[in-house]
Image 1 (tube, rainbow, N blue to C red):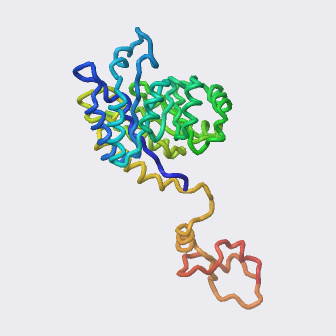
Image 2 (cartoon, rainbow, N blue to C red):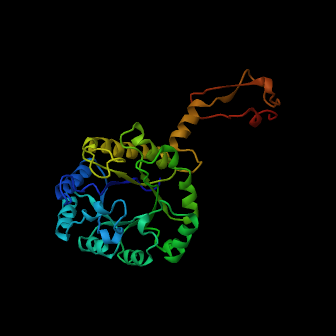
Amino acid sequence: MSKKPFIIAEAAQGYAPINDSKPSLDIAILLVRAAASAGADAVKFQIIFVDELAEPGYEHYELFKNLKMTLKEWRVVRDEAKKLSLKFYADIFGEKSLDIAKQINVDGIKIHSTSFFDEKLFRKTLNLGKPIYVSLGGIKPKEISKFIDNHNLRKHTSKIILMHGFQSEPTPINYNNIARIPELAELTGLEIGFMDHSDGGKDDFINISIMALANGVRYFEKHITLDRAVKIEDYISAIPPNQFSNYVKTIKRLYPAIGKASLSLTDQEEKYRDGAIKKIIALKNIKKGAVIKNSDLTSIRRPNKKGFYSVSDVVGKQ
């Protein structure tokens, strides 16, 4: 069986200001605690500096401008994750956010598709030696292949995970294109993860990820929020802690059903075969030396393992 599922609780920009212009350190800490209590393997935030991300006039410029947290604040959030034995990941968008990530010693880094073509930033990130998750949302196949070749990523298969999916706030079911996952794996030769941006308020908040699991995905990213009713930033695709716990438990419970691709029978299948499949027996006593005919035989379940399964193994023999 391949590696076990690894689930990232995507806090993203969930620490955005609610009633004032400052990001909420308290909410960020609560999101870390929620991710830990739900059983996630990691929590991930976006480290935002507006001048790395957008220019004035961009639709989310004012939001981005108010998302800046200090190094001291980020260290508090990161230390909370460490205290709870939770890996801490960060999206970075430029050298300032990369520097924060380095100084707080994050466990892994996400390159958002926003920064997919920033080769300088990616090279510096690659030099850190941390696991790197690369979003493929909105990126074309030729661009993906060129990116892999330019950075010689097939030499780094143990730490590069390419993430399929995109955020359409929320992403409709028919736009997930789960069938692309095996195609991406074949194209790239790298691990393919899945960013689940389905509607956190609908019944299918977990089902798309289960489909991805069956298509070879072992790395999952799903938004987490404290309470959907509060409608804090990035809540649309997010689920609250109790549902996130169910998300984690379900994926990890169902993972063993994937099994192995080998067509060899398991011990349990061999046992089933011995007990369930009929074996050939004689309908009557057959004289020594006689040639066995089809009419001499029948098949039935037997109390032991001895016997032939097919009449063709017996008919015509003495």
